[in-house]
Image (cartoon, rainbow, N blue to C red):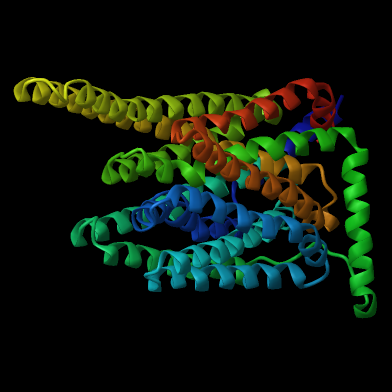
Length: 468
């Protein structure tokens, strides 16, 4: 009886200590602050719009470029992850990919040819994805299991606020001054992205160190790396609970990344206003800050899997909204052509009347779709950071710390191979049907499959939650 109050007191004291973030935790979070501007300026908002303007089939080429980058990282992730688990390698590889990403982002600013821009995007995106692999795995080195949800969520919140919102606002300000049609404004925004990413990567490079690692003699490096990859692959498939979670992640994270990568390219294709789309995405970043933190609070109350399932359901609805956003516009030009053809032999005034009427219908469709884009941006903001943060921390809790990089490598390969499917699916359906609206709707299939896996495997996933 006397031990209970003492235990409770110790728990309270421990809780008070854990409320404060350590220097290592804050430094780790700053990498989200550093590279999130790439996700906003290059992947989601400014550069895709510019690329679609200089390339006639920009949205499709952007989708194929994204697929190529993710494929390269996907096939190399398990091996990179296994190498990163060896002493001193994790940070070296993080720095390498950070430098690769920032340098080729600068190439995108220098290039005027869309092909060179696409090459710069593909390689810089490889740097972005590769750096995130090692950044994510450092989570097990900087914090405890009890704080992982909080640290991971606050990392995303910092990324949305400082990494996305602040430099995004600066970029918009520069483009407003120079004019949104001026390529110089875009180029300056791209340069700002590279510089911001590099400068704010300094804290993680200086203050975060690999605590959990494996010692290995250099002469056995390659052989043991290959053996380790095989063992980890086998371990993931043997444990049904982990396999079910990773399988669901395979599908839903693909959908999440596709929405991020294709949103503005899709909006540009159907003719939405550039300034309106950029401002709507700014709202997404602002909304994502509190909701990323809210997800960590709610995951403690309802469980990580339930919160992930909720976010997946929300993304299905987002895809439906995106479909109607494009479908209303795609039907309007056909209406205009039909009116013009039908009344071509009529009196000129009558012909003009119907053409003007159809043009007004098209304008109304644009206005309706722009409002839907704002709604979609708000909805994405409520779940985008939360689903990624909770997925990262949930996985971090259930893997061996000394092999975190290797397990995250496989976590990454499932995510990246999936990320090939989404943009490719969008580009292919758009090409076959000649409808970008149907292309964005096809992405909902990925979320539906993921939700099905989570529901079917909920008993096995509940076992994980009890263990963690």
